[in-house]
Amino acid sequence: MKLDRTVWRLAAAALAAAGLGLSSAPTLAQTSAPPAGMPATLAWSAYDVGSGGYNQAVAIGNALKQRYGVNLRVLPGKNDVSRTLPVREGQVQFSANGVGGSYLAQEGVFEFGARAWGPQPIRGLLLNNSDQVLTVVAAKDSGIKTAADLKGKRVAWVIGSPSLNQNITAILAFANLGWDDVKRVDFGGFGAAMDGIINGQADAAFTSSISGKAYQLAKSPRGIVYPTIPHNDKAGWARMNKTAPFFFPFMGAEGADLSADARVESATYPYPILMTYDKQPADTVHAMTKAMVETYPDYKDAAPGNVGWAVERQNFAWVIPFHDGAIRYWKEKGLWKPEHQAHNDKLIARQKVLADAWKSVSAGSHADDKAFEAAWMKARADALTKAGFDVVVSSW
Image (cartoon, rainbow, N blue to C red):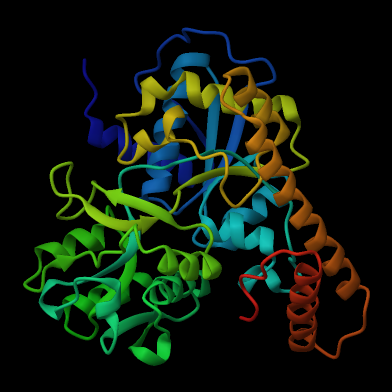
């Protein structure tokens, strides 16, 4: 008897939220031996229940169970810190994380600039580069057609979400604009910011084109538009990447009012990012990377955006270094080139500069957490500059 998919998805979500193992229903006999080094039970942290990243993790867990008999526990987290902390503490081996929990954690900025954190030795396995875009969207009736048209418009600022606001800062920089050039409207959360556009309180906000809120805006009387970010504007991209080097040019084709026949010239970055720490055993990382590739046909159509995990969509020259175990697998596939290794080595050298600067600041005496943070901001910027690296984020 065929099990209703909706019922199964709800059951799987409940199991994962409780930190239980995920397996497909009905249970099928495993069809292949798991890769060498693969534990019988794996654990990931991911975005919160119901998010795109969480749904993808559930689908991947089902594929691992069917193919290898391996259980995947998914631990949902509501923010960057709650997704990265379990990896740091060894509660999970991997995380389907975002830019905040990977790149910003590596950099030791914003939430990760606090005394309890500092720069983290993040390592990547795979990046999900799907057909969605993560960018600024606007109401169609606002008159905004390009990033430059944001000037003078009401742009959402999400309180307590520095990484989200940094993304908008970067897109404004593309158009040679800053927050002083727009009308900043404060909101308490991402959902409230998108609702603010629908309700006429704001004109633009940052989102994913496949988010539920993007579809709600598209169906509202105001409609949705994606301000174009021209790919041939080299100066604009230089300004943008100086503020947020994780963005890259992309023609969005998935999401609200988007399709293969209705693309938008925009910017995006990977989501989610399958990451871990440098201390994770290389054999485990190699096995996880191999399993993600081998089971791709089984999960690629099982959740929105899963096509982004495809081998041909990987980017080996992004902003976080890859783990040695993952590199070993990509070398076996013939995809890891000398230029990728050179880039990786440079990123690891950057992490060492940050770690040394953090150690120096931590050894000092500071009046309070605010004084510590100020000392870290300065030491971080000075160390990166001295080593010839871009500071990127100088204050927060």
